[in-house]
Image (cartoon, rainbow, N blue to C red; front, side):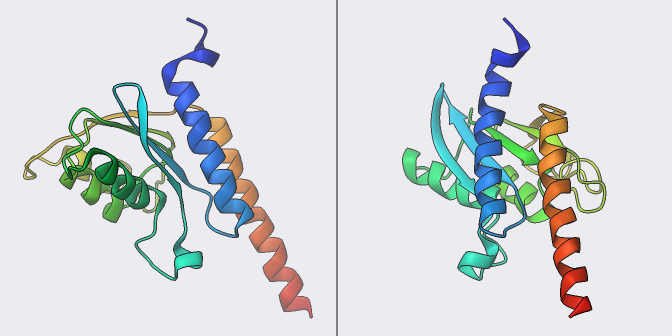
Length: 162
């Protein structure tokens, strides 16, 4: 199968569309999709500013939707596609939800809770370990983040100049 049409790329494109919704709303552009048995059971984007809620990350909101869809908090055999490596809070929620696997686009070397800074998804002392796959559509995921923060810096400089 052509890489452009692989399951991972198809679902990551959906996660990127969610990230674009975040950016349009002035939120850090991160999107998440949760799939089980070929069906999307959760999809979300960051909404911390909109909801005035520090826990309203794309991953948390998608987990909540998926649990409601399954009527079960255990998301066994489900896979999350997310544009950026989950933070420690989201990585903890992923472990608690018993997700089978997380696929992400770009690492977060400063705050990554899955592998870059903390290794929560594969921590030996936790009751569940989550498979990981990284680098899916990395350039596109990195680009949307860089573009968002570039615009933020421009806005900040313009506000300082006034």
